[in-house]
View 1 (cartoon, rainbow, N blue to C red):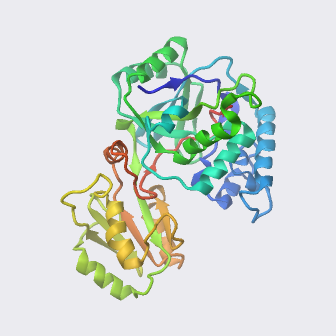
View 2 (cartoon, rainbow, N blue to C red):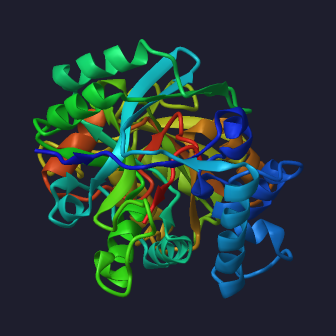
View 3 (cartoon, rainbow, N blue to C red):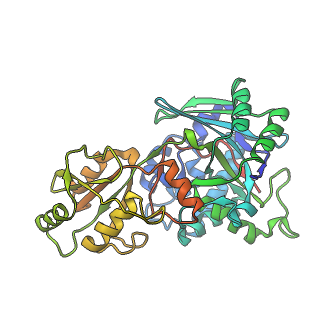
Length: 410
């Protein structure tokens, strides 16, 4: 079973929701966040990326950053204003990007299930990022980042979602990037029906937000889980749940995650291209590979596409294009032995397109770029069910949830 818990959300008054909500803190750099927040005093980026209000070059992990985040959070509560629901409830959150539409259930999910792997994972987390968001939660006494979950689609859940979505929404607006965000509150009967329906869902899977979930788990340990000396704020939730939106697997959209490498190591461009052509058959294709089992390279202002060998056997992870690229190309040919820690490699989300790869190479910021076909939701479920871990930056989910629309105080 999967435990879904109603909670009393802290949320913006409907008229100011578009102005308050912001892109997730971790999809933009500090410079990009500063530009997005400019002229928008209520932007939630001032809470999640509060370093944008401090002098350029400020250490994003300094005490001043978390203190400013807390001060901005308290100011936003007063000035937006942010309101707390009178009773625990659940929400629907619909995302529309072009022709793609997905609708999830927003609520509080179990930290215990996360800890026991009842909520399945496919990615390792980095300690520094965990430390950052854990401190942010502890400082604010609130979870402001939303975990993105998926589950195998359930007719019982779908039936309740359809009924709630037929009503009037709480929020309904189009953000600056063209993505439409619609949120409904579930009434008492529908709230209870959603809790019951999720109790029959065999497992939940983290799609995006491993660091947010890990940080909620760590914050519980640091704050004592509501024990004496650390009581929850009046009317708040508890430390035993974390904020998330769960979407059915058949509505998810995954874009590719590409790679760029700063230099070619000891090889020159001509030698590397010859070696790639010797090992991997060239094939005509677009820069973005049209099917799995291929990778494209951008080197010296020219794209070529190559075929990856299909493993006869192996784990769910070993058959992924991103894993094969690491094993057969990045490691042996470019010396990228650990993509999690090697500073020579960087990752570019598919929403930025192959034009961003060209820009990085043409500008000299990278020497070579690799474009991949996206993994599938089926891949994600298979890897998670097997208890395996994908290579870093394997999945890029679009569209993204907004920060600041639903907040879980603890």
